[in-house]
Structures are given as structure tokens and as C-alpha cells.
Image (cartoon, rainbow over all chains, first blue to last red; front, side):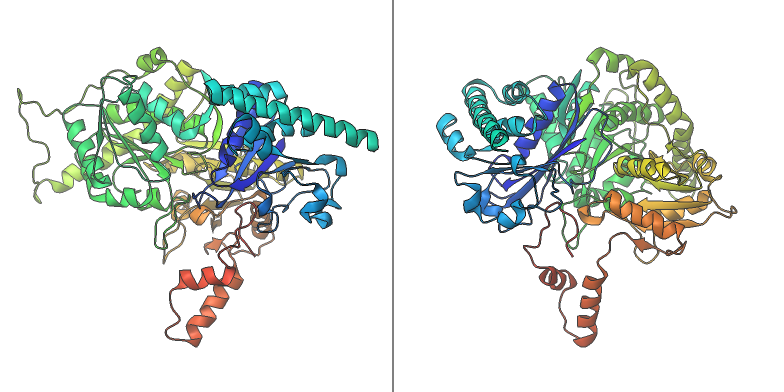
Amino acid sequence: MFQVRIHGRGGQGVVTAAELLSVAAFLEDKHSQAFPIFGSERTGAPVVAFCRLSDQPIRLREPIVEPDALIVQDPTLLHQVDLFAGVGRESYVLINTSRSLEELAIGEFLDTIRPERVLAVPATELAREHVGRPLPNAALLGAFAALTGALSIDSVTAAIRDRFSGRIAEANAAAAEAAYELAAASADRVTVDA
Amino acid sequence: MRSQIEGSIAVAKAVALCRPEVISAYPISPQTHIVEALSDLVRTGELAPCEYLMVESEFGAMSAAIGASATGARSYTATASQGLLYMAEALYNASGLGLPIVMTVANRAIGAPINIWNDHSDAMSQRDCGWIQLYAESNQEAVDLHIQAFRLAEELSLPVMVCMDGFVLTHAIEAVELPTQEQVDTFLPPFHPRQVLDPDDPVTIGAMVGPEAFAEVKYLMHAKQMQALDLLPEISGAFSQAFGRSSGGLVRAYRSADAETVVVALGSVLGTIEEVVDELRADGVRIGALGVRCFRPYPLEEIRAALQGAKRVVVLEKAFAVGLGGIVGQNVRLALSDLPIPVYDAVAGLGGRPITRRSLHTLVADVLEERLEPNRLAFLDLNWELVERELQRVSADRRSGPHAENMLRDIGTVAASAHGGPTR
């Protein structure tokens, strides 16, 4: 089982991101389960959503306490919410930011996980460029595919086209592919450096 | 067709496959997506003929369903929480008149304090209103139970409530197999009502009944509901034959045949419990689980048969009777009367508190190592420190103010944890 926790703010498509991940897994004939924590259903309020991917049927209904991957859609949450709760040394961490990891002032946390499993992606900028709106979720899912290898980029874009249609689908798929390329290139660099 | 969809949408599609002729609804979280999706299906003509009534309240929703059902129309509605309470008077009328309405209850806590999240307080508050109550463990089962519910309701001429955990199931996106229209049409014949308001053949439904016959009418209500204990397994069997998967029935045992400890629960928490059972079994603990699918009528004999070999029973429930203790627990004790099997009651998941594997392991350890007393209500993951602080305030100051607001201040309003669990 591979468990993903997504943090963001209301209006950033956090719940949709979890849904898209689960659809991408479904398209790969995996079992998957996406669910949100609802509550403060207001634009800008912190939102959490979860997705489990597995080769076996999923019975578990608890929130994801120890994620295999963490996606942070909004870096302003980094010092507001206990984002890294349950994140272990083997976890993947994907952060939407146009800054470098060093600039995020989370060095203490970064020391506890494997450096090649952490990635900063300018997903909002990619979304502005491809979608025309600052909705980082699709781009982050593309980067997720590259960083974790848990799903293929083709399944991610297929899920996007399944959920949306027309120009919106194509623009989001393009954002996901661009982020995938960026993340894949970055992963190569880290591997070479290591 | 198998698709990856939200539980609410899956249930709406399943209900539509049952060809309801009247849907009356009033939105309330976490049920809203179901009736929204149904209103779309009616608007686009995908579900036809069907009259969709957007009523002014839940009382109106149930009243309209009663009227529609009495004219012989297959009728459906959905609600949750305070909405179910607002229907309460009409619920008794639907069951007392023997009208086979099917309703989804997207289980949610009841205020005060106001809370939109999941527990079973709503459905449990109406457990004795004469409706049959079924509890779904997954979204697939929610779909399957709705299809079975219409058949059960119409064969007995009694209303059926299909309970599914709000948010946990209604807002979860997972793979669900939706049957074809032909399959459902074969399984669920057209509604052939036992009583109809028909201008060409006038009858009275709902006349006043005095002491001379009231008890007899009520007795029949009970006798009729008890028939569901025989009919439900038959319908569930016919369903597995027709659809190729087993769903429904009265109870479902999991690894309990040789178990010394059996955990009893209702609804979606059973999946997490089964995971814990597997983990403990791997450590050599002889433990199993019993899911109660049908809570009303109460399958007393099946529950007794499933539990009588156990050394102890733990009932995990998402509601409780204030001033008494467990609700399901008391029902389980009734099934086990005169057997020397201690029953432990644990209330969990109130108001959306997540029920985690870790907490369940602690609960089982507490039972096995005798840190809990049978017959005494335990609260899973209760934050005693928070309770103590409020009790101190209460004893120090006569005008200590409202509990809820005091305790929220204690934990801090921005103390939401990363995964929605209790903050400590």
C-alpha cells in the first residue's frame, strides 16, 4: 500500500488532486481510495485530502497518519500546520514553491529524510503558464509521478482527461507533463550528485 | 460497470437504477451530493418518469414521500443528522402506515454542539421508529443495499433506512461496480403496492384508531418487521446469485469462528477493524469481528450464534445512550443473556474523531489485560486532560460558561492536527 497525504488551501483543488490520483491508479488496475477531511469549507482555509494506492482491496478507513508521500500545495502552510506529522525517513515530499528548498527554512525537517526524495516544484507558475490560473494540483501530480514512480505520467494525464474536458483538460495535462519533465530532470541530477 | 467514483454519486446512480417515481429532498451535509446528483439525473431526463420535489424542510421531504408512496409511487429521500430528527414525527407515520419508502441516512452527529461530521447518533436516535435499518460497510455495499432495500421494503410494505457513514463513505472515492438497468429491472420488479390512494377506488389511510385496535395494529408492525429477519437473507442470497457478489444479510462474521475475543461494530469502521484483526492474528491473538448489517429488526439469534463461542465481546459503537451507556452494547447483552460472556462497550468516532488502528490496538490490549471493566462504558481516545480542566473550571466558578467554547479555547482553534486526529 502506498499512502499519499495532500495539504493545501480551500480553492486550490486539494480534494480534486486526491481524486485524480485515485482515478489514475484505477486506470492502472490498482485499488485506490481518495477521501478528504472536510470542515472549514472556505477558500483559503487549510484542507487535507488523502489517497491510498494498493494492489489489494483497501479496507482501511483511518486518515493517513504515516504517509509514504506528502504533497504540499501551499508553502505558506509550512509553518502554520503540523504538515510533516508522521513523515518518515523513507517518505517522499513534494512542495509547491518557486523558491529553493533552502529558502523554505525547513532544514531541521529536511535533515530527517532522504534528500533525493524531496522536491520543490514551481507548480503554481507552471499552472499560470499552461492553465492560466494559479491552480497547482495537476502540475503537482505530474511531478508526483516522476518523483515517486507510484503512477505513470500517462495515467495521471488520462485521469485529468477523464475528470475534465476540452481546453481545461488539455491545459492541465500539459501542466502535469511539464512538471513531470522538470521533476524527472531534477531527479536525474540528484542521482548523479549522489 | 466498474468506475472510480464518489460514494454519494454511486448511491445516486444506484437509486436511479431502481426507478423511483418520486424523490423529495432537502439538502443537508453530508447527504447533499446524493440528492444533487439525483436532481441532475431527473433534469436531464436520464431518470424518467420521476418527479423531483425540492421541499422546504426534512419534515416536508418525508411528508411528501408518505403522500407519494400512498398513491403507489416508488418513493425515495435522503437525509442526515438534524434533518432526520426534524423528520421524526413523519418517520413514525411512514412506518405506522406501512409505506415502503427507502431513505439514505448519511450518518452524522447530532448537536449541540453543532458538528457536521460522522457518527451514528442520528440513525441510533431513530432505531425504534419502525423503520428497517441497514448499515453499509463500503460504498459497494451501500450501492447493493439500496437495490435490496427497495425489494425488501416493497415485499413487506415497510420503510427502509440505508445508513452509510457521512464523509467516510459519502465523500470517499473508490471503485464501485454499478449494475446495468436490465440487471436491476430483473431483480426489482415494478412496485405493486398493498394499499393505494386511488380516486376510482377510494380508501382511507391513516384513520384514528382507539384503544379497541391500536395495540393490534402496533403488534402487526412488530410482527411484520420481524419477518425481515427471514426475508433479508433470502433477498441477499438472490442478490448474490443475480449480481455475482455477496452483500447484505443480517450479520457478517470475520475470522470469528475460533475467536476468543470478538469485536462487534456497524458500518465503515469494520474495514479498519478487520485490518487490526489480521494484525493481531499474525501475533497469535485469537480475535475476530462481527459486522451487524441489519440493526432493526434486531437479529438476536444470529448475533447470539455468532458470539456464543467467544470468551469476551467488545462492542465498538459510534453513539451512546446518555445516562446509560452503549446502545449496540445493550442489544448485544440481550442476545447473550444467560451466557457467561463479558461485554465491553467502547464509544468511538464521535463527531468525526478518526478511529485508528493504533487506538483499536490499545482498546484490545486494555480489554485483554483487564484495564477495562465489562459493563462499564469506555470512551476511545478520550482527552482526559481536557475534561479535567473543564471540571476544575466548573468547580471553581459557578458561572464558568459553556463547556464547548471553554474546551475549544483550551485546545486552541488552530490546533487542527495534520490528519484530523485528536490534538494533545
